[in-house]
Length: 83
Length: 442
Image (cartoon, rainbow over all chains, first blue to last red; front, side, top):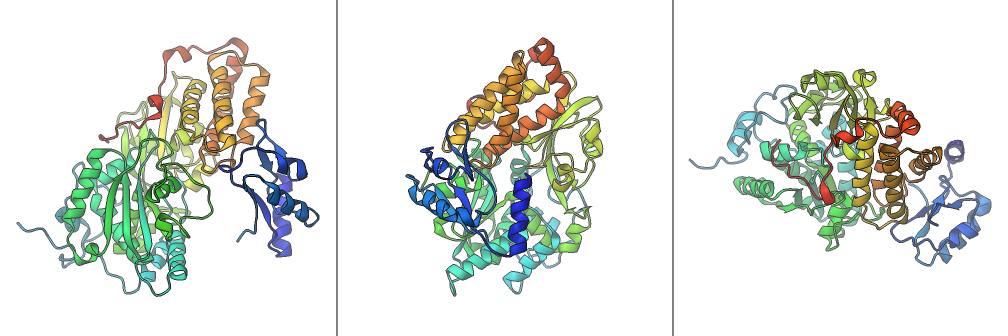
């Protein structure tokens, strides 16, 4: 929870609209590629489905995040910039 | 006698009394009686006038989401202007009276007794957002027939420009969910879809779509006539106006009643004829949250009020649990029902809800080990916000509140197995096979 608050305040203080990861749970079939590529932000639930850390993707992980999005076999993972 | 013209009444009527704003009595209001009671539908100079009035009223959605209705109207009106500049009538209005929540009957009662108030709201909102097409969804074949007749009864020029189609919502707990309804209108199955796109941007027929609960629309019809200050003259500052609630359980006068939002829970239950002592109230229905009695008696019945007690008003269900019942067993049965309602589209819900139901069954009807209790607690944290719709959130919230409110029972079950009340059988009805219960009577 504290992590979430921290990242939210970072976003509002910086006034930068940083992208967040989002998964379409209907499309996701638990291939687990994103979990392997980006364990800093994506962990697994007991059934192999991804659990995303809420909040914006830190700058140093954005390349990996884009890679995870591109490698998702069902195109379920995406990077969105909140409005 | 000829049918009255919709806008033919010449004088505006004084506003209806508080707590009888939406429902006047036990008989359906004909169009003539409706106009006699509320006066004619006012005309607005510019569509945005109504939107501003609704924004000032503080009206929030009465279908469970409690989203500000004015903001929704404005979002659809703006999306319509962006997507179809210069073209009027390109948006769609969806009036949701589906009410799939088994314990709720307020939408069915409203549609039966005050159909023209809902139809007024549809006409006004269609004009405000620039829609030429509206769909009114309701469960139950008899009510859809009565509604179709009510639409025929209206013959004004204003309403004839708008096509309103009444449709029976497919059976199933999730089919009344707004993206599921839109999916049906677009030729798909009655299952929730992933958001975005939001219905306001791209909904039915890929057009900007306003989805409002039927009670919300009825309130719009009153705000248009009597204004935002009148609407706010009852209720709480943070939750203005009245709302329909469905009270069930061991009360002398169960059923639907209109209450000023913010009325203390104990007062609402007393008016419904609760005279015996009771242990808890399930607020919001099977999707909802338990609160403990008498501790929660002073909690205001409103979204912000119930939030202070870790609960939510949802679609307005208040189900009283008598002393002679086991809250854990009730929760286990409801969790089983919710698990059966999963559309199976999303992995966390497809796997997590049966796991949650099985563990809750063990807690209620077996002698739970600390591991089982820890597992349930983990699931209540793991499931929220993991599905396309809010079914996993609802199930997790229900179970988390049960573990909190029935903590003493949980200790008893852990120590010596199921309590004496478990064998007595269910107090709250759980529909078999998850199909819709008949709600034709209030």
